[in-house]
Image 1 (tube, helix red, strand yellow):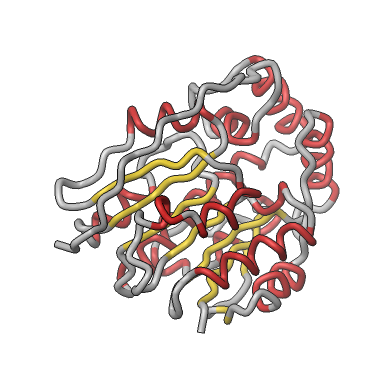
Image 2 (image 1 turned 60 degrees about the vertical axis):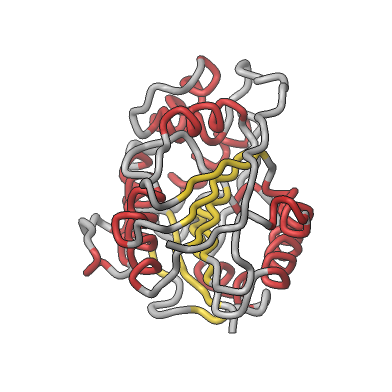
Length: 276
């Protein structure tokens, strides 16, 4: 069993929940058929599904991508994971997949929505020998979080770390995304991995663009990217792409377990990269 550094779980801050506004995690939960959402989230989700009914398929494919990435990394010996933009818990969650292979693994979930964190703490339980933590922070807080000495105790920084940023980087501009990834790569140990998924209009065309417009109308601007732009975002940050490089999420290592949907029903690219 790893000798994990001691860490006291930080409290969820008291804050305005803004349930009158759509939130990405709750919209995602609504489209996936969950129960943790409010009227504004349901209204935004309904408009998106009206524009593109296959959005459900695309989001499910992204979820399945997370499962395959978690297994792929755990089988390579990774046993400490940081999940940026956790979202509403939907089983199996990251820690369930990882600890199914590595029962002593440590997983830290990070999100900026106190509703997400409250549900995570209530529902996410790890193995007796493993550990699960929850951090209240925004993606844009990542550089400060990584340099915070108390929060750094979550992991053993002498060994590789697996970082997942799935369906979150679309909410920041290219310049901000590059800044965040550069800060991340500077902090994580050598041989650490970063997994990302980002939306694209390459496959679904105008339907995916309409969904992005709906997000923007709900106060959630979204950046769509091509495969080349996703690859450049990672490589320019000092990372090496792991095979097969950037692929539609349902086509990333399908041998690990996935259903091959029609490409036009999936509007998400996924990739895993490693820090040399």
